[in-house]
Image (cartoon, rainbow, N blue to C red; front, top):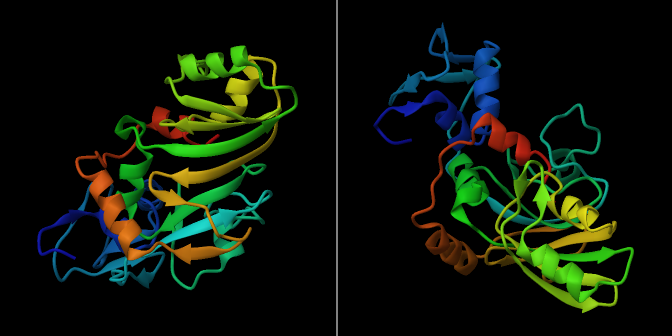
Length: 253
């Protein structure tokens, strides 16, 4: 860690223990100590101070982990152990990582997992306009009117979705590129026009593609991909979500 003091939730996030939001919950529950005192939300950690999470000493993670994962249907993008089909247990990766955003249980495709909380925030914040691409099959023929409607902005969740790129790929399938991730956004957009999503697969997040990954497999993001991703993230905000934003992001697409 840097010699400068950092907030306790960022310390835990950077160490790969949990996200900042989860850190705040654990701090509020009294499960975090700085030295011999119970930590409070907003506390700062300085060089040489020991931090304990649920009674165990936190060792700052030095390895930067970023995985591209092919999430199958039926797996839930959560770190909660009470969920039997959670993504962490499914992957069984040897170090603490957590998902960058979510795909709902019935969706499949590309999911990024990392041990860096700031990295998560930069990609996930809707205001940063980072692209995510999906292949979708629906239960009716895809018409020109439907494509225009999807692309032009759809009223869902007390808002109107951003304009986006939508292209027909088959009689009942299309490709869509979003810069948002509202709760079950694509499914809700389709429902607005009377369509039901039959299958939904995410194939790209920014410059990271699903290509070549088998269902349920993962790979480390290559150095050239990471370098390009960092260039794309330059200038992106990593501010934490408000409660309202987090609720909207709770289950993507």
